[in-house]
Length: 109
Length: 113
Image (cartoon, rainbow over the protein chains, first blue to last red):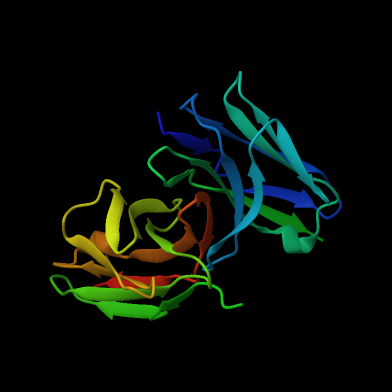
């Protein structure tokens, strides 16, 4: 089993819709989690850090479920510009971020 | 406030050659981590440098080596290139006391023919 797993998608949703995807992790000792956004052929950009139960920033909400070992990302009122790949990562004790393979999101007009 | 910079942007090499990639961290940051991102995959940790020493290493062969300079910039060297080394190489900078907050540079896209 991979340390961090994501549904690769693609998720194809209409503009204005709410979309959510999950990321599961295998190390129950993990304390820090992240969602990065990556546009095609660009670098990952930090979208949100998740250290406790969750975090909210505008239309974006991340939640952490330690019992079931997953984090989720919810995007409300989706925009065309939200189309990207969303990478989930957890910070390991070895000072590195372990990433999932990413979830592709496509917002259609 | 300069962000993370990397050079070159693109590089084409042939099997067996050697390559050097460069990274300058974000202003004020002292730690550099290198990641390899193959097509369709998430970034994979290669190694991390601070105080001019390799501090952590991922599951990569010795063909991958690095260096950090006194100004905190860093190089990634790959010897005896293989076709499978084709990837986007990302540099992430952070502060030693906040290693969990890593900011990525634009990457170097390496193609090995």
